[in-house]
Length: 403
Image 1 (cartoon, helix red, strand yellow):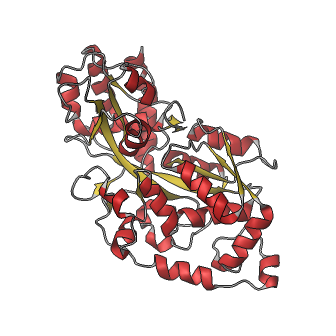
Image 2: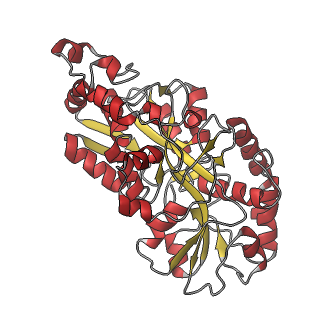
């Protein structure tokens, strides 16, 4: 992650982190939480929690290969094994990213398990590098939170351990790798954030940024060849300018035009550059604008562009080489519990199980009501193949914008 958030992505900044929604893809998901839910989370969680582990089950379980909590003795056994390990290694989780500071604090308090957050301002690629470079070491990452392109890359490299959380059925099929290698956790929309004290003509769309009075004002949160969120900004611009999931080139052309118009500032935009006036307009995830800028800067306004509704999720995965395999799996169970999903929601994100929470009436009402209005209708996502092609195109063509 870079200033303002990590998880870059293959785009490498975290705030960049993700690239797009999970793998499978081209199904339709309502990030607004209007879609139906399977309603299975409560029953599956109860089943997992009620499966009390006998001493033999708890002692004989190999958590490094367990594919579900039910398969290895139940939640009691998992908690006991994780507490015995006493430690969890996470990586590139800034405290102000998706409410991870509170999530980590609450997890530690609830289970007495110490968390080490390595390289909090790193990138998704940094996460993969760390897994490959620290195999067999006690400091190796147990779990990751990466953009989908990186989750798929990790699958290709064979570094994930399959694991299905108790609420597996509440994660849409299009948002998870079928065998449990990785699955979406939270997401949001590409949005335009602007400083209302400096920007007198509120932007409403990508087109407005190109034609309006925004000289030397508009930035991404990094290079789209390194930062996932910046890459998402280019994808969103493509959709607003005649492109498609299969054709991101119009997005690159858009930013080239924006630069030629004198409106694009080729720096890494962040909360600090917005507050200083260097980049009064910032294209970023809606929830990061809200949490990393809006939390301390009251002049921020956020709008989802009227001409492009581009959404994406980040993904969780358990490392095959996790030095704390039980704690890794307990962490995932916590993140996908009602408690964990609501903590993501309180971070301004749209957790993957939000439709289930809303259906059950268990969502944090204040956090849910504070979300920026989501576009009506379903949101579709690029396939992994389309993302990979788009990444190649951006890598080849972005130098014409940045040069």
